[in-house]
Amino acid sequence: MNGSPSRHLLEDAACWRLVGLLLERPRGPVWQAEALALARDVHDDALASAAEAAAGADEGRYLAAIGPEGRVSGREGGHDRASDPGRLLSDLQAHYQAFDYEPASAEPPDHVSVEAGFVSHLRLKEAGACAGGENEAAETTAQTTARFLEEHVATWAGPLAEALREAADPHLAAAAEAAFRRVGPLRHLSRSPTLDVDLDACAALCGAECDTGEL
Image (cartoon, rainbow, N blue to C red; front, top):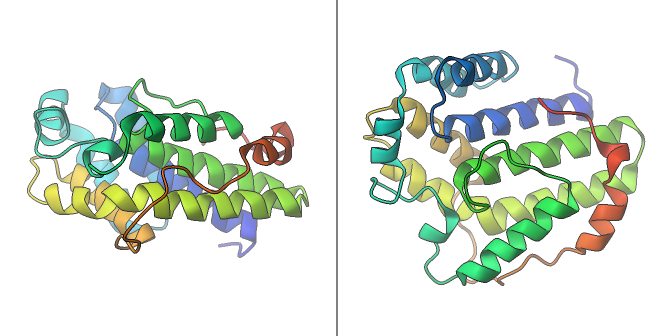
């Protein structure tokens, strides 16, 4: 494999996109085909196997595992009772807008699949900036990604992986485990309700010139 920074970032983007896709509601053959296509671009055997295991997934079992009445919440707000829901959603929307992220699903902004998709989107932006020699944009995006993983994804990755280990559809547990491997345990005891990121600067630096297209 090419060892260039862009190549590693594109692979990481594929991994996060696959995590997000597997944590979405199953959408039949088209959804499964997309997961299998992404699996060919990741160097993570467990995650690639999860894409194959998703063949028999259905919405009923998904909702029994992740949903309002399911085994575990599929939303960040369900894992951080101390956060203010309105401010959390506002913060996420501001980040999505700053980086021109439009989720593929209609789930709420703090849904785990949407947040995983955003990490993939950020990695694509960073890869595009690196390839284009936009060093400041690449650094800004990398810093945003690191903070987003710590402040948001780390909130739910561990609890979700633990809760889904006995889920009927094993691809869900594998996807959550993949997210947890990439962020580790929650390391902070208190969090500010918003990230310390200049979103206007992000929007200016990470606009269309950083766009690499969708995976």
